[in-house]
Amino acid sequence: MATIEISCIEVWREISNYLDDEITADLRERMEAHFNVCAHCTAIFDGLRNVVHLVGDKEVFQMPEGFEKRLYKRIRKGP
Amino acid sequence: MEQTEPPANEAELIKKVCDGDREAFYELVRPYERLVYATAFSILKNPADTEDVAQEAVFKAFSHLKSFRGESKFSTWLIQITYNEAKMKLRKTRPHLYESLDSQHQSDEGDYWPTDFADWRPIPSEILQESEVRKALENAINSLGPIYREVLILRDLNGLSVKETMAILGISISNVKSRLHRARLQLRDSLAPGIDGLLSGGQSYRKVRTW
Image: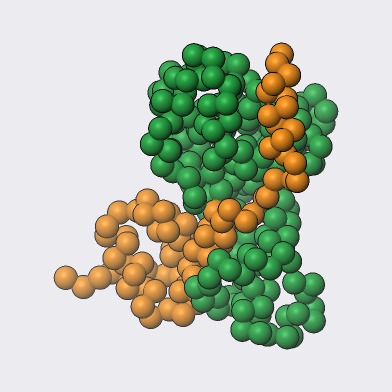
């Protein structure tokens, strides 16, 4: 059976759910068919995946120097 | 997302702490310190308040650990405490911001469409070694609207599931998804051209951007 084509706009609307695998198998298949032929949507998807990867990296939002030491001091201090 | 699997000895550590071993608590909480900090920062956006709240939240977890029943992961419980503490702090110190975060009337804006089509190939996370990139990413996250930022931090930085995020924020699954969607696309739009240029050695981007 032929895959029913979907538009770029439909792809954009679901692109974050696609990344999280929160879509139906049918929609996934249609989106993958779209990515195969659409460079724009592929670029957007690559970027989105990179953003998620970067946000999850340990290098982001580093704690300030001495944070842990002050934290343990607070715990020792008690209520 | 770095943490989804708790350390193998977590239950044992929790028991030790409940039996009065404070050192075990340090070990228990160490993997999540940065997540606590980032969660508080995402709401307060101010290092001094963030540190206060992070300390109070971790202390609260320590002193109430006996009431942790293991119905959620320890990390989720700790993040929930942090989130609540941060919102309380915001209400006390900056009530107008609290209103905007907490208002029941806050509605998600309509669809968000990408505005930038720069090609951004898969990249190694080594680029985060460049402090300008890290700073640019943090600035881009900070410039998101609060309801989008909090979802992004819980999901993509803390690595919580959609359901855990929903429970902490008290919003629907579809709101979690749509806010996350917008947050990610906005970040991509603000970062893609610069990072693409940086990676391909694109000096033209370096000229117009500081990173």
